[in-house]
Image (cartoon, rainbow, N blue to C red; front, side, top):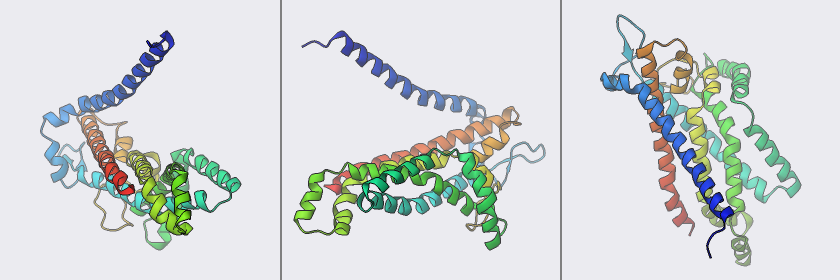
Length: 289
């Protein structure tokens, strides 16, 4: 049976939308690469990892140390993920298995509201509440731990909601089989639900990590903005996104090319992390079997 005119129109329309959505990513990468090309052609790339300071506008001794800022981006993201994942997983399990349905729905609405709060609000809260608290414990206050805590709060609802959706997608027959075997609730969650939902949980964590790597405004307000490799959690740092946001407005042509190169390298780091989570999915699927 040949497809109708409406089916063909829908197929072509959806195909065009798919091509456009994929092309946007390629165009953005091409845009960054074209802007970074002058810096890459002049052989500055090795200096990103060999220089000791970030002074691209200096006339006497220009230096282009990008490594401390890349390290700051990775460390802030890793810290936020480590802090958020256990709490998010516990919240998802509690919502799905222990809360009454009415309260569980209210809890999910609150998480959805938290996910929609603008990042500048998180940054403002971190600057006025969290940073002074950290300053009492260990000055100066703006630091790696402050940025990690703010980012952890930002990605917490994403991980919780995606983990909850993955747990709800587990077939009810598996729960009935576990009950038939006499398994308790905690044993069922640990041995049946979490392995079966691991695919969706890992995807949610990957989505949250991608957001955390690219976060700018909240991090700028609480990180301290010092381009250095931190020696402790209380040292100020300066991620790549903060550097681009703070310096793009007054950067000269060569300086701007370096910022484009920094953005391009950050995209490569994000793609590497996303690819790692994608590679993890098949093994997680096989483990759930």
